[in-house]
Length: 459
Image (cartoon, rainbow, N blue to C red):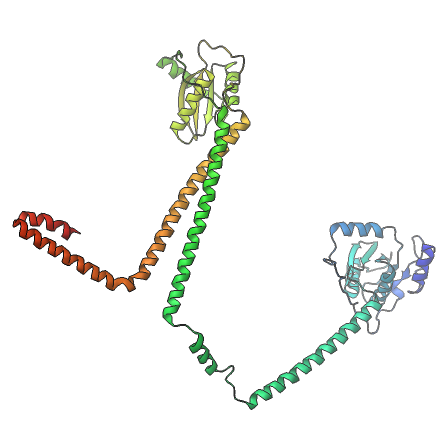
């Protein structure tokens, strides 16, 4: 069937055509000639289909629908702002055959407002506005739109379900009334204060049992906390062992050079001059978290190609740590360490290349780590330090928890064992007095007696 002929047939059944149409065929329906009010008109019933997540359209869906609406013919020509129930009823009929209704705003009509038109149509139809300008208004029927026949069937089913619910509610209320009447005949204590007292006397525990249960629960809770911390400690120790093994594997290829025997020396005047020049230098090398590796020594030799001094900035933990780094740089590069100075937040290491400097054939020493391995080594060292601190904290927590647990046990056992402790202390005191009397009888001297009595009274 011809699409244009089908569109004409649909539009013929909606109302009179707009003869002064300036666009292409088919002629749209003149919406101003449709009735302003429709008796018993209601906004259509809507229900989202099963499996559809949301009725709101995404940006991509809006774009696709606007592209689909562009080649569609215009269905209505509108020049009135309000009282559009007849147009809304016609749009609902259009939506049974097409998802999109396209409305043109009449030209030359005074006081037309496309914003008021669009809001009125949205309120009457419940559709989604795709486009609104001074030429067209395009409305999409929505994912939850239902044709009138389907909506009528669903409304009937909902009414039947409501009737069934009302019948069930009436039957339930009648049965409850019959049970209440039967219960009123006999005497029962259900739901009364007497029932509460009876249940408390039968099932409730006294205060001593409750205290015992609370103490046992607290003890079990602390024991579980100790076990949990011990498990964390075991995991942390395993991780520390792994970090140590990984660091040892990386340090296999690290073999630092020892101090050379015939090293050049500098006078104090030369050191003072080189230190002053080095601190004024603008070019420098930055020593990061990797520490000393082959690339640092290579850059030092590249600096020495153009100047006698090289300045290296390092953010060390302490001055002793920076001095160790400086000595390592001196031995690996073959230069002479001039000074290690504090510069703002960093430490400046100044190294002189030497009077008899000869550039080596290989700038990168083979006994140091490369850049990647140096980074891995620094990560493993950092991990090992963090795990050591974490393990110490866990051990302190375990000690504190075990101490608290033993204190709780002792405090629980004190009331029951107080009498036995008093007996033990009295018997010990009597035995000590007997021992003192025997010593006094044997020696007969006051000095020996005082020597033996003093430790007892100190205790």
